[in-house]
Image (cartoon, rainbow, N blue to C red; front, side):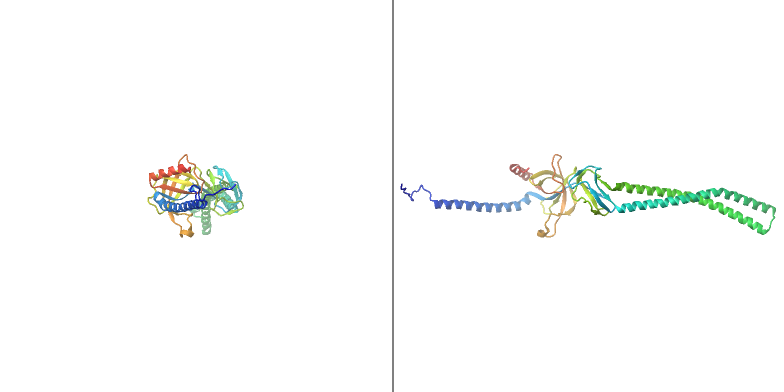
Length: 348
């Protein structure tokens, strides 16, 4: 069967023109998308600082450093970073030759004090027992001297011998009395020193607790915990415990801002797709260097003021030590508009 095609029929679309028209629509759509995207980027980039004040922040909490005043080596670590501990839980064990030397020094000092005390007690006992005999001899020599002086008998040599014996007897009595008194005084001081040494030794042994390290508070173990076999100098953190019951955000407030944040201002903490409402409770009178600033692009890192943000009682805070973004809207209308947009997009 032969079919006649009428190219001049106005109701029949031209396939070439149809393809051109479709291609033109796609090009115009792509061009419009690119143009509006660029315009939207510039509007958001330059207009956002006029709507809200935004800056980076860090989720923090009060941290307690667990350290030892000795050079130690870690022999056992019972917890891992991120583990939850309670107050008094054992988190590890260490050994310390320096602590052993300190204990040996205290014990050596105690032994020397005990020897000194024993020696003084012997001297005091001897002086006390000799004191009565010396006093009796002194009385006898004084009676002999008095008798000689009354009778006026005897040669000069005999008189000198009597006076010499009386002087020696007096010297012996005074020496024994002084030795007894000084022995009592020194024994009292040495007993006090020995008690202080024993207290110090007990405190050192209690603080070391045979190398067992316990958590002083309840919280979360931070990421920089010590490892088995690692040697730590005095004061180096064995572990850091974060108090999970008191979580806050340290907001690095940008230096370029229209209005300064104040205590009581409502803010939003952005963590991924979550928006968590918070409130500024403190504006710290210090500045800090924000470590997240890329030095290669902006040169020196900027020092920013710190505002402390706390969440509500029903809020679920982000993970500790995580980096977040904080937005503080300049006006209530902008905040409501942003809230409606977030509700529309489902970014809660």
